[in-house]
Length: 260
Image (cartoon, rainbow, N blue to C red; front, side, top):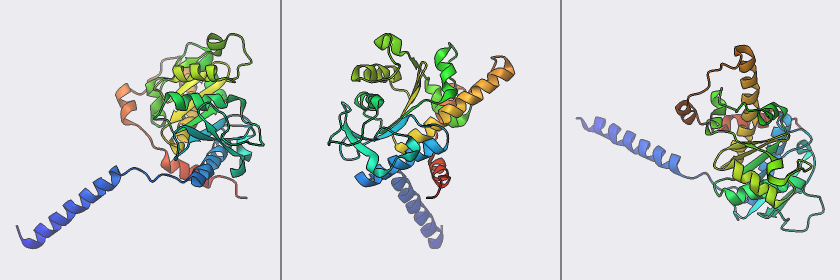
């Protein structure tokens, strides 16, 4: 082998090793303020894409203290600003005195974070697409590769079994804990007569999962109407191999936000 050829091979190997090492490095941790700004963007994206309307919420675990999380004050997600973001402990108590009122259902977030150290972001939505699957015996299944996480299973939580006859709101730690137990290790759970909870190891990922949970529900319903219930879903191994990061979607959805 000639010397120039050998040098080229060594250089290529060094470059491949460098790329491999870089790909294994963890993503840089966001500062507190940067994460707050991302939570604001997440609220706006989910509202702009029709996942949230005047209700629902999204949170992110603190990058500095895993026993804290950031969630907006009660209000329409599309109108959230940085000044609305409040820091809570995992009992869902505001860390500092906040003038604004917190979401009644903030316990969803605190209890999921308690139960799941791997979860860094949570969405609670009222999307109508998922409601029929929480009220019937028809399970949600992955029909679309962008919803491959659904292959883990999407359990249904019934608040009546956890708290009897209620106003359907997860307004206590006990109810939030019961919901988190039903979610288990999965990415999403449905809430009978209410909506869904979605969890992920990053804010961008949870926004993508919330969007595609709804889209998969719509596609599944359409396919069932066409086929009379006989639908070909993703094979479990296909679902495992089709994992998505949704990073390209985050940039796209962010670009679609109205300009002030």
